[in-house]
Length: 109
Image (cartoon, rainbow, N blue to C red; front, top):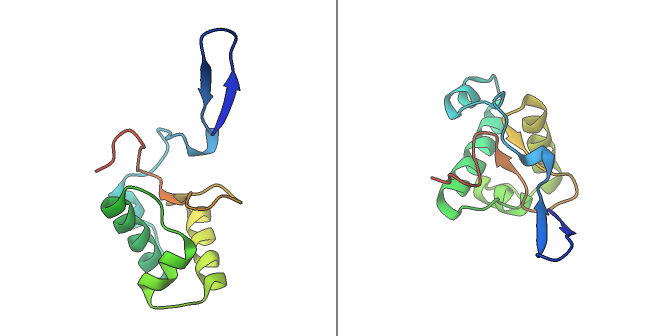
């Protein structure tokens, strides 16, 4: 998130456009209906449950640990494939930015 200085009166927050929810984003049921491999489905469910439990994004190391795997490269590849499928969003080069597309920052369950 960038912060742009305004003349007298404070600061104006500018949100990252890639993370703003759009009407074209899928719901939870639509995300589960997308054809995924068992490993991709497992990673998606880990990300989803992590958000529901902790209200912030897991790291790649967290995802790998929960799955019982320690290969971070394979975990990153699985997350990138989920981004290509459109069921999760993430910012490249930023830690803890992965989230399911249906999670809004204003309405966390």
